[in-house]
Image (cartoon, rainbow, N blue to C red):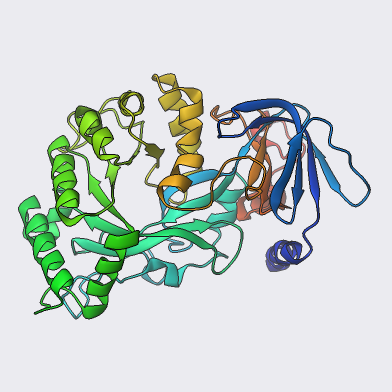
Length: 411
């Protein structure tokens, strides 16, 4: 078993060094750009980028060819806000590096950078990657402080330093997280106001370290602040705070974001939401509804989808499909898990256009249908092995000949 994992790793590592030209033939290409969907087209990939998109591109023996046979091809998808590569087993403390609690300094540490602990060999990553996902937002999970730390986008291409985009500072403002700071949302805002006042003056630092103050200054200039907020009232407070301190905010949660869609649109603030949240699971989400995403999109609010899960992050396709079933245009639903996250977080464009990074997926059918599968993932122009711990276990233990139904047979 160990030899199998090593072989997979070596295969992927070696393929990076031995990348060759690649031609995808007969694609139904969802460009996620102004070009829309291009039917029955070829895609030529050179040096990890899309060199040409056109019908019937000539080929030769030096070019590897994959025939899409009219199947959908999209940019590799966004797996949401996760701790992929930071958490193997949540119940095992030494396998979790996404948050800090009860740190002896008793200060807030926005300089806590989760990217420093990122492990590209985590079993979670290939499991997510073979399902059609090429990148995610690494999260500093809420610990016992208002400022949880910071992270950023990471590519699932197997690199140790596969980060891109802007730094993202994580801010807790919900009533649930307020339990660790005095039991009231007011405490969150009180601490945030004092912390920012200290950081911008560099005088009498009592809530934050000098390194944390420097990080807040830098992020205020060229970073993003991800505020966890569900209530409409909390979202409006975030907008006011961000305007006062000249920050670029992103709302994460947003169960009641539809109530303040115009304010969000006017401020140009994106919302990361789970479109399956349609019940009042807490007093913060009494106004949750299934067409939240559709209402926000119609108002002009940039939307991104995230399930809040890591080990099942690949299910974010289902979220997008449900949003489309509840009024969101199909192209906007696909954008919410591909091009929009890249644009919001300052990464390379995730559009299938000439010159773009060749992160592509060939699907068996509509990528927003749960019955569709990613048949080939290509990251940086390199076809993935499509092997994960799950596929290895399946091949080892699932019968090839059984009286059981098809789901119980190794195809």
